[in-house]
Length: 340
Image (cartoon, rainbow, N blue to C red):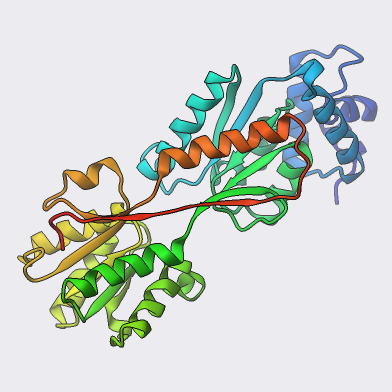
């Protein structure tokens, strides 16, 4: 395990300088070049300084106090692939950023979970103190511990952390609503399009789907459960394979509009008419779902509200609210269109 002296040696500075940099001690002036050298050495050696974390937190909290407000917030996105291609998370980000600007704050950085797996990027991102942060999915344990030690207030968007506030929607109920709608339309052979097969058993959306099948006395067939890997082309291949083996159901519930629209495209390519031969229900109500062919029936999530609520919870914490962490669960509703 690296020591502070190892960092100092690699950076070509004293151990005291390293301590000042990682604790944001501005008592002594340092050049940007020196600071950069230290953080590069910290990242390269994967140095962790648990003994300094409490002092770090005290400094951040003092900086974020009403008398010396930093006015800077951060965001960690959950994005698969390109940084700005997921309308669900980007809509949350947009409404969060709008609320932040209206309160006179600044969105200091936007990072993805993948980017922060690079220790140098991680250290550099949190080099300067911020007042608060929203995170949009679960981080690795080491990354979360690092971020938690350096951020006085964090709000999660539907994360698994219980030591911070969260803003979420009811995944189970959303799935149950989708299956109930398909049943009301006369469908009995209903499939599920999820993310990764190995995650299905712990997925709240899958559990809602499975429970609804049981509630309505419908068959559960594992052949009707398809992974998407959050990739339209991958999903299209799975649908084509199931079609070739004659193992398609009569309807699908997809765990996101993005994947539901991908399924619509796959059915079109296979000559399967929607909704005459196959019904599809999505989840989220992204803007594009209104313009798919045919327009997509979906479970509407109050996506912009999630960003605004997250911002308001963060502002309350920054203003001194020290009540126990809470989860704000927003409701969903069915929007029936032409795909069912």
